Length: 252
Image (cartoon, rainbow, N blue to C red; front, side, top):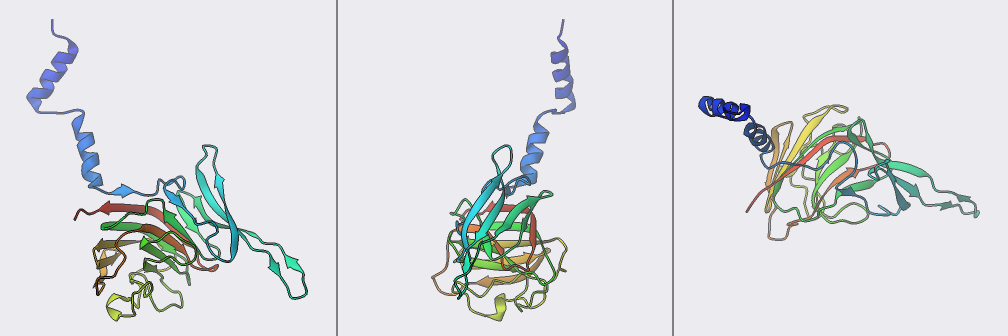
């Protein structure tokens, strides 16, 4: 007598149906090499310099019941007046997890990927910046205090800085060539938008909301070839949010 399992498998074979494999294949096809860098719950895979700049004396990690970091809180330095009176430093939440997103604010600071060997890749984020806010999406950057040494892709809809979202920011050896600067953002403040960077050697391509904003090759043979990813908190008036961060590494 045939077992139910054998009958089931036999019918499956005749009909050409697979009941287990498609789910795995679909997952691989959906990922297509993309790796999620933010799990929507905590800062696994991310870190901060301690302290992040001269304004701070330290940064404290806040953790959940599972021991995962869910916020980075900076403590500013004590200020001493000319008459000798001192004003104690304040605690400022710089980066936190809120409603499944990364929320940044406060004085300037940067959130770095733990990995620092990214070379050629597609790097895509889904972000939001407040009105008059300023932020950045760094690639191939060094891990260190202050504004990172590396390439910044601007996030700016209405800040007074004329360099808007989609630009390769003129810093770290990048000049003010209009070929890599965007003067009008193609997204509004306080709305989600996507920004993708394709970096292959000296060539940097930037797409905002699917539109190519910059397609630029860094001149010469001196350029940053690898490094960390980083997210920028620019100033106390800027509030930035990120709900999707992913990378697809490209083989040479």
